[in-house]
Amino acid sequence: MTLTATAYLAETFDSLRAAAANLSPAQMQFKPSSEAWSIQEILQHLVMAEEMILGPIQDQISQAPPSPEPAPTVEVDAFTLAVFPDRSHKASAPQFLMPSGAVPSQQLFEKLAANSSRMQALLTNEAWLRARCIESEPIKAASQGKYTTLDGVQWLLLAAAHNARHTKQILEIQNDAHYPR
Image 1 (cartoon, rainbow, N blue to C red):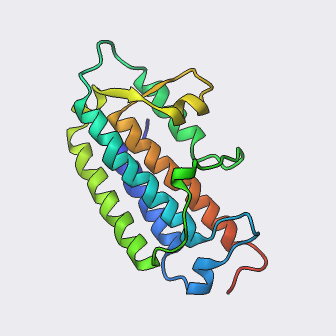
Image 2 (image 1 turned 60 degrees about the vertical axis):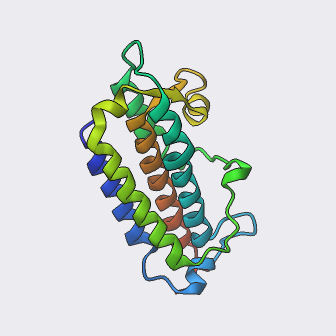
């Protein structure tokens, strides 16, 4: 990986913030179709996903014993960074990560910033995170079972790659012919 995990987290958060900052309420709530999410719903979805990674998943990682054998770190990192931001493959969020659109934009931005800071802080102990792996449904599904676990750093890379994917979605919305200007 040419970028460090810390740099990738910062880059994807900065790109997300740049794409979604200073938008009017009409722009935040615009949906290109009845099935599509608004930018506000995308941000809420990202907060929900990050809080799951920073909560229950991080708890599982902290309780996991060191892995008995080395994981294919470089290979899984590269796969995560290539596949998860790719919008050419559509994916549906699980029901528990579906946004309601009811959370105010300012609160979403505050939570995203706080989550980014928490993830950056976790990376100060990268070697410890790398030594602990837990099962991952997202990597299992995306790799069609080739990979089944992620280490602590890879979960954070997944969160950043997920942000990159949805930043692209935000830019797609903003390029819609009917998007409020």
